[in-house]
Each structure stands twice: as structure tokens, then as C-alpha cells.
Image (cartoon, rainbow, N blue to C red; front, side):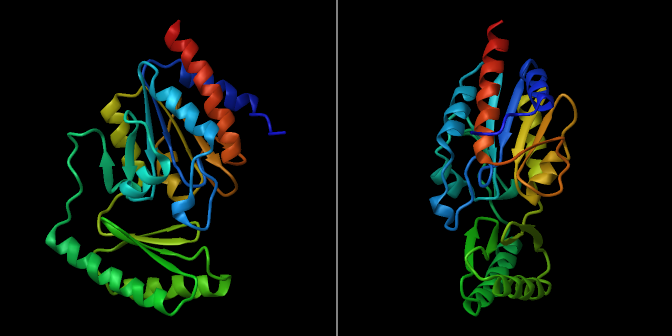
Amino acid sequence: MSESLSPELLSALATAAATDTLLVALDFDGTMSPLVDRAEDARALPGSAAALRELAQLPRTTTALISGRALESLRSVASPEPETLLIGSHGAETWTGPDGAPLELTASQAEILRRATDAVQKVVDIHPGTLLELKPAGVVLHTRTADAETAESATTAARTALSAVDGVHLSNGKNVLELSVVQADKGRGLQSLRELTAATAVIFAGDDVTDEHALKTLTAPDVGIKVGDGDTAAEYRITSPEQLVQVLQELVTLRTAGVSA
């Protein structure tokens, strides 16, 4: 039997759901989807996917996914509704509709990315179980499938190699070291969506350290939810992606009643 949502979280959801213009923005991996070893195998829990679809159809309600994944990867695993806005690569990529401009690197950024990719590839080549993922504006070192000692060694080696490459922005995540040639984070991404949608309240949930940038931007009546363990700026915490299903289903009920009143 799943754990009940706290009275405090239920109250906060009710307040946010009553707002005039609501933005519901979610991280994907570890939030809508349980974490998996192979990134391409991730899928949202059916209950979360269904609830997000329902929210996307409600008046004065915008849904969004804010992910570290590249947009192409996010679309592949999340199968978002056409109305759902997308922030990828921790904010370096955005999709706000068919008229939105795609990400284009400068010649300097492209050269920095080439050098950084070469450096990470050399680390992966000598650290079994690690993987390299290419993104339009960066590259990711994945260590989830390596043993703990190899993962630590690979991360240290990559940091050392990348310290010699100017113009690289590094960030840590769960079993990943990510670099980007575009300075962006989920907080900036969330702020841009808030401005675009003129939201009067935002609900955001995430599980990773990279989600803290977004959580730190929230103020009442916004609702920030941390999924799982770890230090957080979020006022509310749930245990798992399974419990997020409860959050979203409750939100559907509350918001449907509010916009119908």
C-alpha cells in the first residue's frame, strides 16, 4: 500500500490548484520515471503519464518537462503531449512550440564541444562500464553501470581533463558528470517558462541535485517537491516516482474542480 501524502502537501496543492494560471513542470528521470541503467529504457509510470495528459487539456493550465536529457531523447522516452512544453539539456534546449528557434552553437562553442568530447571519450575508453552520451550542447559521462571504484576514478579523470578546456560548464548528477558549452540550468529554464506562460503559480518536482536550481526559484504559492532522499530546497518531499502518481492524480482532481467552478 502506497504512503499517503502529507496534509501539508495536500493543502499546498489545493492552494496552487486554485490559482488563475497554473504551470506544472516536472523532471523526468527519477521523477516521472524510475531510474534505470539504460537511459533509453526509461518510461513514465502510467499513472503519471495519464495525469499529465489530463492536466495538459485543462483551461489555463500548462504542463512542461524540464530534463537533463537532450530534447530528442526526452521526446523518445516521455512521448509528451503536443501541448507540453519541453526544456532539455538542463535549459540549453527549449521547445515552446513549432515557431521556437532551435539551439545553434557558435563556431567557438562547437570547437570547445569537440575538444571536451574527445577528452571524455579517452576517459571512457579506459574505464569499463562507463558511457559517453552526446548532446547538442554538451556531453555526459555516465557511470551508473560501472563499479564504484571505477566510477570515482572516471569522474576524477574527466574533471582533470576538462579543467584544461576553457568554456566548459560542469554539473554533477546521480552517477553522471555533465558538461555544457552553454551556461544554463533548470532554474533558468523554469523561470523562462513562468514568464512565457504568465503563470501565477508553479508546481515543480524533481529528484536530482540539478533540480535544486529550479526548486530554489519557487516562492508561495508555488509548490516544490523533492522526490526521494537528499538535501533540498523543496518545502515538500515524497518518497518515489510511485508517490508522484498520487500527487498528480490529486492535482487533476483539484484543478478540474477549480477551473470548472
